[in-house]
Image 1 (spheres, one colour):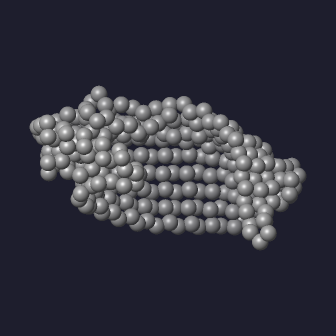
Image 2: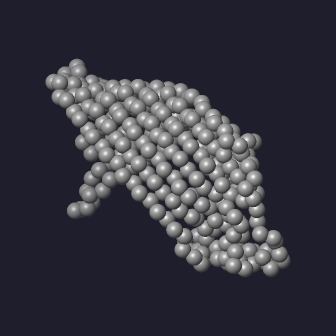
Image 3: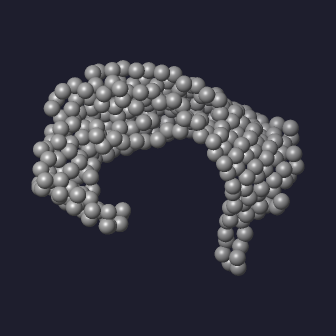
Length: 298
């Protein structure tokens, strides 16, 4: 990414604009032009159920397509007629398809409620974008992503009494990530040659909860959960060194809480009190580098 020649007036103007912005609310900006934004989003969902006596079989199919194109500014006015920063998403197109097959039922005279299922998800996305500073020509990044996810799960609620119950569930997920990326700077020089990467991830997750209802309007519970977010690749890389693999994110959570519904006169209320502790492993965050433009770790 190339910048316009830096002059004393340009630097002074940039600092003045930044100082003025710092004195305003984060909800108020001084951008002096309108940036275009165009988006379309459509999809279809079909749910089919079969009642087989004590068991209900359900299939949920979903398709979604999203297309966007936009330019984002810095939120600051132009300096000497030059835009400080513009981020171009010239074209983003994403197709998503999913299908979930479930079996739901009861056993042990209603004491046990259960659900088992299979889940499949696939998405493919293409993107073209770039970054411009001080109205320089846009850099260019072309990327393509294909993600697939398959899982099997089961969950059950066992009622010891009308007031005490146990919820236990487990899931195993297999994820496949395929990624293509290439980038050029504003001068048209290739900074990231066309590169294709792929990697598979797999992790178990679970939920375990003990629930107690002193009455129909109150709930006391203690829960332990393990969650998982698939790994992937640094989707905004502009050089081979930045094109790194992102490890899976694992979250183990412990929660204790109470809920209550009631009335204060003629006004209904719902109150919740909870304490929780979460342990993250390989926490994923979005980061940016001002020296080489914006990049995303995901």
